Image (cartoon, rainbow, N blue to C red; front, side, top):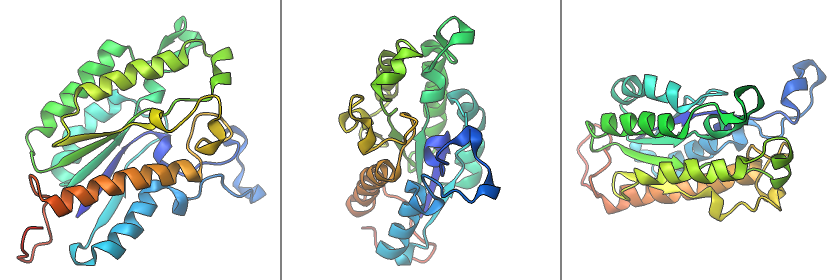
Length: 231
């Protein structure tokens, strides 16, 4: 089984202070590679389904938007041949920018258009499952410098939910779990990114969906090349 992660920095390791990070200081990372949900999924898949020779490919890149995802989606889908794609994008798109008159980097209309382009491409491979990880609410205090960010996150999450059919496309609703007024449970000290507990939350939710895909066999996930009965 091949799980492919596409998205922004939420799926990556995280320094405690990203702008001041200096590897020479040997400051421990706030989220190490082994603590990212991609690494947790890799370890879990190998242990739970050793016969499937599973791999997790993390193609997340800092500052990625749905525009870059759309530009590369066909290549990732057809050349990488994933069984499951985890799409984790949106906060970069929806964040109000002072240098853009307080508007998001990517308008909600463009965000929806590019997302639907990806879904149309996905429909050409009906056995590939898509898990969309919703945009995590940020800490409420960030509204001071970025007015409207929480409403913007809610709006863009509503766009992500529009394409969910709970068959080929599933949704992990992070807003159900993260309280903007008590962000430290799942969020990094910057009030935006996931901490190790947040990564573990995404791992728990995505691994449950992948288990359901495999063991219920609806629109079956492809298995290893050797002939095996469908689960």
